[in-house]
Length: 190
Ligand code: SAM
Image (cartoon, rainbow, N blue to C red):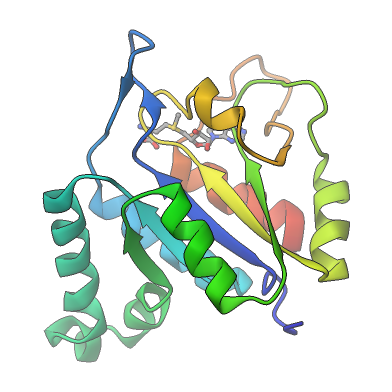
């Protein structure tokens, strides 16, 4: 078990299968902001790895080019802090590949936890998930969506759902970058 706050946790940002505005299942485009901002949050809280998941070859090539620029290229010397964060990024085709990679890296059972803005029955509270992560018996993969959110087909194949972030205003549709940062802080912030 690692001593980093979120050492038993990895993140996955899924660009498929997610909904579009018409609730059709689509593949969304990778964004530069999601790569950088979530990597920085992941690095801040000591997350093990940040997977950027897309089945589109050209999108993977683009994401890899951006991360390589800051990991190895001119960007690495220009901004070492960004380099440090982007070292956590792994670009990968599908959730099954993420699970395979995690199983190679961690000799523990992998538990998949989906996030979303909707209340779902049986959702774990932040306290419950934080406690499970601290126990260190299993590795937790927090899954985030893009577009209009993760599809029901994805929710059907995961281990847990995390309760949504709410502030009592009736509006809780956060950008994925904000949601990832708030969730990491609720779970691991001091
Ligand atoms: N295009 C959007 C953007 O700019 O980020 C993507 C929206 S995507 C639906 C937002 C993702 O962030 C969700 O799939 C979920 O993973 C997370 N998210 C957003 N609001 C949330 C909330 N209130 N509670 C928990 N997770 C949330």
